[in-house]
Length: 338
Image 1: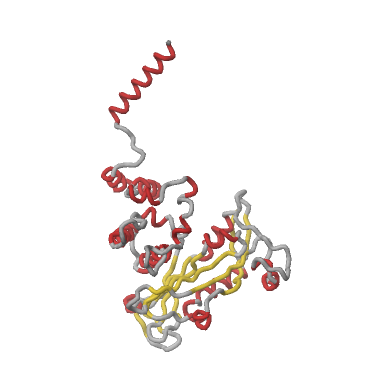
Image 2: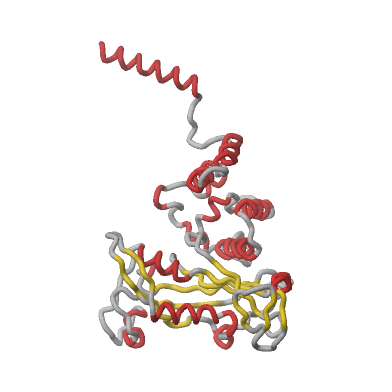
């Protein structure tokens, strides 16, 4: 009887506390979430991340519910490979990549990117699942926080210039003088991502699984091929299959986007396609000059295959791993360009 009385008294106190403080709902209301987000964004980076989670709209929570470390619902990567909607010429992954490319190229803030997402969502057919908050969008890009740089090219001959050293620059190919402002205005540049940092993340993830057991005529994987085993690869090194291809942006124009993607061959097969690396991104009218677009990539791979990447395992032990360029997998059209 005394236990029942104590339990009843505790329940009564909890009910009074709930009446004073209000019921804590599993998802905050829109008004309170917006207010909390506005307050927290002016504090620290950590609290800003937390407020972004709280400021998710209810619709986004339905599309991408939180599953702890899984982050996304089961099968979400399969959804990315599907068409955005029936009759669409773009997959969901291509659409999100185009939004990211637009944001990076024009230096958009996360708030501006979120506004663009909401604008695009308003033009999509009813029932299409599309992220409308910056939090759900940037969760698709695990390495989006890595550094990137603008590399310029000559607007006259498409010769590679590189990162602008100052206000004026002379093209070494055609000797034309350019101002940095004019190159920016004409969008004569492409983006180069931090490939070294992305490889470091893969190495530190501990997911590498070397499946090579020696050369064989029964080749089931690239790591079992003769050419692969000719590479000076050690147990900690990786090889990269790279690819680039044009993605048309609009049906009525020749504007296109060319991402330079890489796949780590030493990852288990299913994780290779789920952990693609983005080395560069070019988009504009026509096709890029590959001698120009691939210049930073060639330089980076020469460094990674000679000096390597320093990383630490889960025990804190430091390692140095080299990254070697593997095969270039492209279609017939892109092959002649490369």
